[in-house]
Image (cartoon, rainbow, N blue to C red; front, side, top):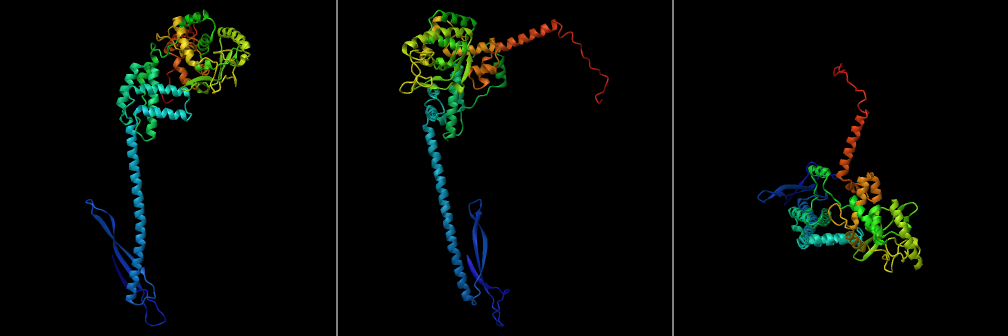
Length: 473
């Protein structure tokens, strides 16, 4: 850094005298670093600043002194700039170090978090946040237990798509299709949550999409059964067995599920006020769910409050059952309209058609788990089996209703979805199996054959196109 002074000879100042005065100017020359060479050595560039000194300075000595004062002032300003720059550099370095430590901590935590630990944290967060109900939370816990048997202790950072593919194969051999599918969905969602929280970079549980060939083969497969529904012979055997038994909560629930397609929790949540015996409808307004804290009242699945028509045979049976319940309710001093259909008719609903105990839990209705257990005993006693060769569960009665409506009664999918309480028709379409499509093809072929035989098609005059024009006419 060098400073020099000179007079501006081209800009004289006259002060009323014949001798002009030439003002002084300071010139500062310095070098700054503008970059680095490949070997790391600095690259400098020469810079220059000029400054006009006060016109009151008339001597070189005074000009040099003023120039030095100007340079010192520049140094003070530059020191301030350097201080700010240094402060910014320190803040940037501190932020980079904090980010590095954060990533290191996340990596350390990710190595500590196991697959099942992440699933447990994820479903607990959903439940405590009110996203899922207690029954769904219990179901997800069962999925977590299935994962725990094979992948539970593995850190989530070591979970790869290859390991997931091997796990898929093992699950397919050990569990039913829907069970394995549901477990995989829970695992995939929990890993997506881990990715969103920065514990892993990529979700290893990818969504497996079936190839076009697989989808076509599945669509045209006339042998594969997805549900353990009851065929006509098994339904007849079941109804005859129910007719030989005395009316009770289990037999009534079985008839309602078979003839109306209600879910287990919806059957347990019915009170007589919901049953319109004169009009032949059941109003599904609530359901009974089960969780770790016991049973509780909830809305029907998908929040679909709906009216379901009853066939005459179910209406007759429910009328007989209502008379028995009304007799017991009268003895207990209860209003029959507010008593449970599937449960103890001597316990009246206390509030809004619901019998709740001091803890806010339903009381007097049949517990859904009890219904499943007693139904299993009844099904084994009657000796009925479903399409998969297994003893049907209570939910298979709902599948049976859907199967009959879809394939034997040819009910439109939109109407069936409304009766079943499905949020969309895609869920309902699974009940329209390949045999039904084959029956439709045979029906169309027969209709066309009859049309030709009756002359409906053959008597129509043929239309012949005249080829007397060119392509440009």
